Length: 229
Ligand code: 5RP
Image 1 (cartoon, rainbow, N blue to C red):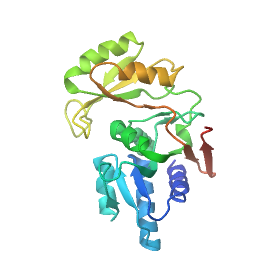
Image 2: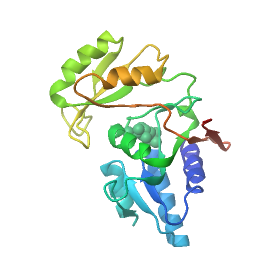
Image 3: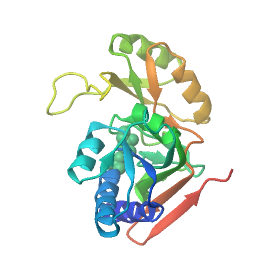
């Protein structure tokens, strides 16, 4: 799996050009990309600026000496590179395993080109088969959102903070995450809209028609999927 992530990150790195403003996603595959980018900058003296999508990516990027900027300074990005939890053959995605989906969607949408990097285990025939859809919600609304989600046929679960935090996970934006399992997702775009219009929903981890390409890495090599326009 790690080899697949490395190959995908390496392939995305080959698209980076001197002078670009980059969007930097979140997760373990992006962490590898950040390390590789830092090495390339060191070797080739590239001048790139990065907009991170989480504290995790911002702190790793800073530690590796990357120069950071913001969407306020640079609202249009040349290239965004981000991971995914599921990728279908139309390059629709489920994202938010690392609870960074809101900033990821903002940054990825601001890029002229958005590339997904993932290992082959993320490729699915149909979204939602393995992974629930993460939805970021305003804390006071999580129960009302959960009720509305059940009416849409979803099974919501409030994400727990894990070993290091009692109670719900709190995102970088101070919100909660509902992980919503659906039996099947036939129309990701329609579901994204249905979820987005529930009061209290901040963002939905379905990324439809956003990615331009994906590099899917495996032990054997890397496969590029380019979205047909
Ligand atoms: C974070 C994300 C990540 O991109 C996604 O969870 C993939 O992470 P990894 O590269 O560690 O498998 O959406 O919110």
